[in-house]
Amino acid sequence: MPHTTPSPTWDPAQYERHSGHRARPLHDLMARIPPLPEAPRIADLGCGPGRPSLLLAERWPAARITGYDSSPAMLAEAAAHAGPVPGGTGTLAFQRADLTDWRPGETFDLIVSSSAFQWVPGHVERFAGWLDALAPGGVLAFQVPGNHGAPSHVLLRELAAGPRWRARLAGVLRDAEPVLTPAGYFEVLAALGCPPDAWETTYLQLLPGEDPVLDWMSGTGLRPVLTALHDDPQARDAFLAEYRHLLRAAYPAGPHGTLFPFRRVFAVARGRR
Image 1 (cartoon, one colour):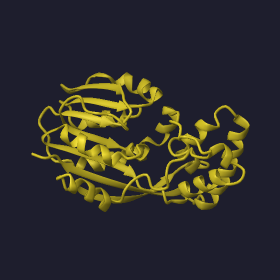
Image 2: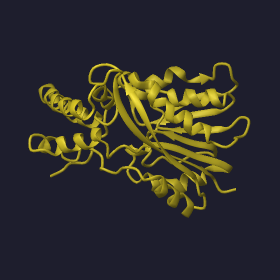
Image 3: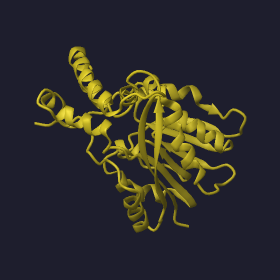
Image 4: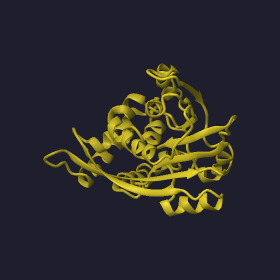
């Protein structure tokens, strides 16, 4: 019988190995967020090791920002950044929270999320409650990976479902379509009275080094498999060897590095006034 998808364990150092590429969509998202109060109250959903919250603090140095994440490892890294914002009057704090049932305990001027909702089944069902927690004119803004139909993910799902691995990995990976299209998010938010600015961008990422797509996936989409096989290093290494071979064929190295197209989906919605 397929088992319930386990919560993956996270490796902050591995995740941060491609921090420049991972931060770029958040910069693009922030550029489309409309003006906020001078000292806004901000919730950062899925703050990871704290980098998104730091970027928010740079953009709004007087803000009171709370980052929320479910990973103890990520929060342990983020804790080093807690306290007064350097060069500003705002503050940073971090709390453990599961976004599948997180309910705002106060009013926010901005609820923002970068690369987290793909891990939250049914996240669109949470939007109504989050919009209700916005101050008048507040903003819900997020971006999610939209590349789950890319070879990196298709090959991973096919390998995990193959005859060698299906018994060990049944139910481990996410659904093939864990996020909506820009039009899908528009319809959901418009039905809640907050038609968003929604769009998508495909970044042509140039990754350096040997097997860089495997290295990228080891920080994100591959985490559920690494978690499931954690207690069996031989099986883990065998799976990685097969996956590495498939990725090398799908993403051949070029003279300047390995091109890794990456689609992102964005939405920025003003709350009800």
